[in-house]
Length: 600
Picture 1 (tube, rainbow, N blue to C red):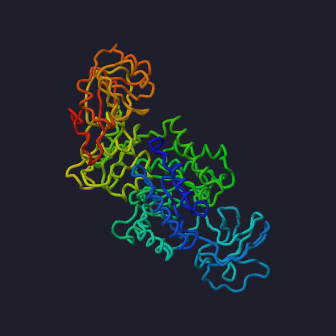
Picture 2: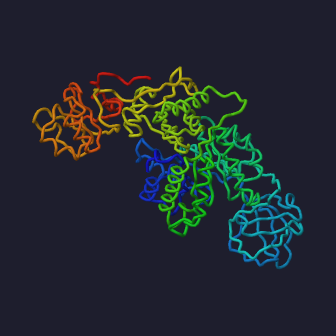
Picture 3: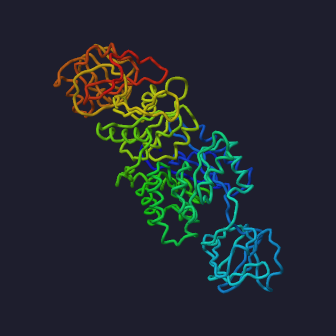
């Protein structure tokens, strides 16, 4: 599905439910922009196989819409360790816990034991502390610390499964941010050229900097996952160093009361929008679709509210990784996005920092959005080497598409995550700024005759130097005439002079280019996209025939049959009385126009 129909992007977690190319391609076609590989589950070999499949699928998509790759690190997760079989506990039953490397004495007789990934657990967890296992499905409270064991009592009957997460709300645990497993995850991301890396359980800005420092030169873009109260409290500092943010509502809802999560989500999105940092809303968005082919009404409202809050992307987790209906989940997400954005115009909250000085790039981006609205532009074009200008324009939530043209494949893929940005890859040689309009027209994002606002910078080719704007009407003007109607149409030019046959042979959807009208043309009008006639007169037979069909017509077009090349593609703009030629980058065969693209 073309992202021009929506602004909000879709991140989908890939796994056993979509581990073959046809299924993965189907997810992409239904709307997935970013494929997420969760490194917390599966083996290294399975991760590499899935990454290779994502890249292979991405190589098959067109330059008009990328499929980005995100790797999600394990992070300093707290999990049960060494448990081989589930443990069934009744309410009021005791459980003994210790760190995996601790050496406690024998546990009290009859009390089941578990180990955790937290070293020296008894030094961190006091009496009366709350313990949550499996995202809060098992709730315990600590009653004593005895012989190297933390003894807790269950508050509800539950089954504890091996490998589940464990949390100690409100307790600061002295754990390194990057474990040996995390370092291997980062090395894998660098090796495979991941576009985004999501860092789990980021609590402070130094966590992001530590990962970036380890990755070295040209690292992937880093997403800070806000999954703890500490991370939320340090969000402003984290936004200064992170390339993106993910709201991990599942773990955040374990660390914080559930009733706080909706307001925290809105606040995180608001602050990310203001900082120009892309934000992903994640966890349980269409959870029921793991087992059901349709979503609940509450889930649809949840997704819609995140869109209205201003999220850049919404994420599917188990729905696409292990669910029974991965393609249906993506289709449902896409429909919710399209309907919500069409009904409420998405979150058009233009950020205006009060009393702050802004960078030149941000000032240009804000001006581009303002000018685009004032001149009724069809799009904003941001030729870019780093992707930064496109992100800054997106920050101000324009009413028109942001088309980011780049010759850097990594930037093209990275921008797949950003709200309202439609990345286009310019292949081959040539100047990105000068060719941006042609690339956008060739991709069908805008038609010849479209008015666009284009950002640029001097000196050219240097990232971070965006400092100029221009308003331009795209396309080479081939001919002019008197327009009948206010519509426009695009099609292949079929030329006919006198009573000869059309050159090339007329097909449905072609633009008829004729010298004078004759009765034999009536049979062709019903299938024509537009009519261009040398014969003058707003009440001429050609004008009336096109008017009756509701198609654009230009009459009195001098030398139309000689100027327009047979078989070339043109746009007929009846409102302006102009015919534009589409020049593909590097192809000058349509270069016979009488006027070049003009600046306004």
